[in-house]
Length: 157
Image (cartoon, rainbow, N blue to C red; front, side):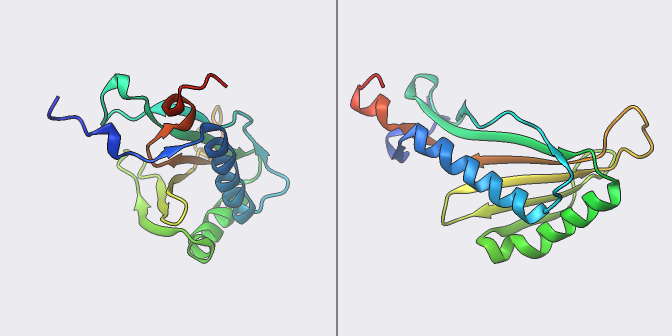
């Protein structure tokens, strides 16, 4: 058990309000990308268990993966450049800006919103050499780990 963190040190938050805040954070990023004609994947945020804590501790985070696609790659590239310029102006600190660790060396921005306790991993996938694949901007927004207020108070919803 010594390799697991103490769940009692994790903030207690309302999961429903965290889901709403996650959607807001994702929406803010989408607004910066500003590709009105692009399609956006639909699934909303969900919770994932935080693996640094014991399984039965009820510690999880919000996780919202989504993508922007179906516009020319040049438009996607301009949207990605807007993120570089605008994320810091919207309270995000860019902590990584460069190629990811993949063989394709995909451009990647990792940014943290310290005030709101969220991180975003954003990648520009250039699939122009693969006609069976779609170029896109892939975004994953995650919250810090938290314990659900309902679990803490014993209420059932």
